[in-house]
Amino acid sequence: MSDNTLAGLSWKPVAAQPGDALGLPESERDALIISATQVDGQWVILSRYGDDTWQLDGCTSNRRASHKQLDFNTVPPAFRAVMKAMFYRYLRRGRRGAGPPKGGTLRQCFSDARPFLRHLEDLKIDHLSAVSLMACATYVSVCKAHRQTSQSKGKPLSQDALYHRFKAVEGLHELSQYSYDRMVHHPWPETSAKAMAGLLGSGQGGKTPLIPDDVFCIMFERASQQVERGHQLLDLRDELEALAAEHRWKSREGAVSAKNRLLNARNWEGGLRVFNKALIDLRTACYIVLASTSGCRNHELANLQSGALHRTQDDEGTVYHWIRSRSDKTDAGIHDWMIPEAAVRALRLMERWSAPYQAMIAAEIVQRRRINPYDPEIAEAQKHRQALYLGADAKGGNQVRTLSNDSWSSCLKVFLKDCGLSWNLASHQFRRKFANYAAHSRFGDLRYLKEHFAHWSLDMTLGYAMDDSWGQHLELELYDDIQAELEDIKLGVVENWLGNEPLAGGYGRAIKQWQREPQNLLIFKDHASMLKSIAESTAIRSNGHAWCTADDGGCVGNTLERTRCGNCNNAVIGRGHAAIYQRLYDDLKGLLHCPDIGEGGRQRVERDLNRCRDVLAQLGMPPETLIA
Image 1 (spheres, rainbow, N blue to C red):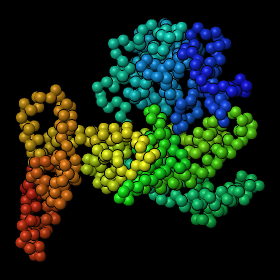
Image 2: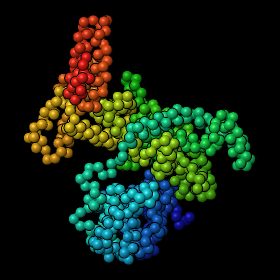
Image 3: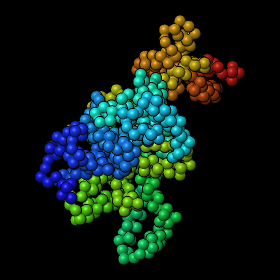
Image 4: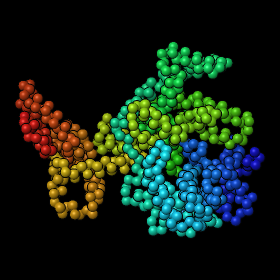
């Protein structure tokens, strides 16, 4: 271990290592430090240049251990030496126009570059300098013809996957210019990785799929129900733990038998195996609730620690709940997210759920210190010591660490299957669903979410209930995501307006009149430009029975006198609103002949009947259905 311990040495001399390995004697080159960590104030080397596997730092805690390293044994032998040279430079200096990469970025580039190197090996090319434009062109064809054999069996690579593969080849070309084995030609002159992947001009490349409402609502309801029953489940877990402590001397079979007897006495069906699955499902349910109501990314939830919850109160007594975590998406680091009561319950539950796992990590640290006080795994374990979303690896000696993104993908798919749903659910989809719902709330739809999403109003002053430390680090990129969803919603609405279906309301009739004049359409270069221009220049929000284009929300047609929208110059009413006006029309017909509404009431009913009749007629309803 003496070779790997930098006794009495600060990190500063190590940081002064050369930016590339060219020209260094082999012994000096192989001794270059790739990564190191501090264990109780002592620097311990994790990897050197000469190692076959480089351990990386700067990776998010939700990555598996195998995804925090570069294994050069997975590279074709002819390219291992030059790959080390290139990736050392990349690690130290970064690429053109960017600083040194984080560990995850480095690993991604390494992984995406290997298929190209295997392609060269198949072509009997053993030097980058021998790579021709033809070799690069055939690689593009091979990638586009490739069919996956994992979970997406038989499917081609996505546009994003193609882009990352092609981008990695561009990276090899750039980095090789500073090595002893240079790629002579740019892999695809006159074009780019993004263009060849089909992402230029599409505007939708890499867009996260939006979880359908019918899938999301069933899943979220199931998760919420499990969270509501969560403390009862953990009470039973505590009983089982106490029982296990009493029966330490028994065999494993004896302990299992004793636990099953206790579960049976508590009317639990299915025994210990079903109970343990319920505990895992509870962790997944808490994740679903928190991810759905916070807008946090997977790694930001993975970085949540015990004590992450805080509350503030404004001058009117309104309480706001906040969670704090570290975001590795940007260099901003610490961020705060506001959450509703439902998320608070899930978070409190996870603090209790994770306590035994945190204790296992604490015991691991004690044991490792006893064996080797400078074991680098001590530093790794400390990173997870207070985390909430933990799991034990049965194949890795029951070691407890933060769940990886891959593990979450598996857990979420199992949860969805148990709900009887079929959707390719992934952890990153929750953020877009949150942004979409927040945008719908601002747009006026989903009014039952108004209370929860009120604080996500895009014109908020951010002046509510902030103390000196909490609420000052809002993750503003989430607002950009919400704004993008809002723009998509408005584009979809305008596209419907300019379709073939009729519109009612003063503004709706004006749109159709404007649309009938060809010269109005000629001012736009194409249909997409027209939609974008109208959506951006028009204030659009939903009030449930119409789209309102007024600049403010003060109109009584939005609240007290809704039938007024039929003739309002700011209203657009489409076929989607017809059922509302039909139901209102039918109810008003029943009121018309009530003897106790008086003459004034009768006149108002007749007025509203006429308004509803006009709207329905403009929307193309058959006249015979509109006879009072």
